[in-house]
Length: 107
Image 1 (cartoon, rainbow, N blue to C red):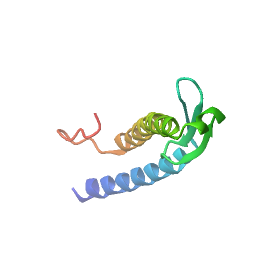
Image 2: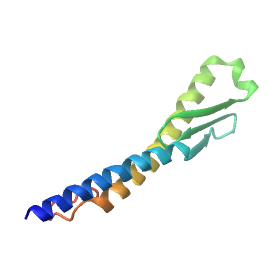
Image 3: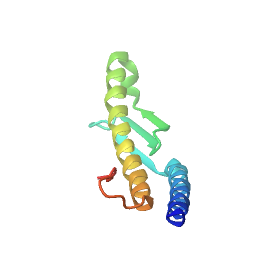
């Protein structure tokens, strides 16, 4: 019984280390998003850290339009980054979790 518990604890620690390594790796995974007309381009990491924002000169003339573009494009980029992040972390966590009936946390 204790052997199984110790083995499970070791596997959980290993999984935690893999999750942390995955989080670190996701800092180098870049997500690009652009407005539909290409006037605004945003790049962020899969950990949702903004790396670059490119704004066409024409958007600088209309503050309200620029704000709208930023909101829409940033939200799309963050959604994509979140999906990549959650998928990667869940895959690592599910792979390392012990098979406990009724405890399928990562469907």
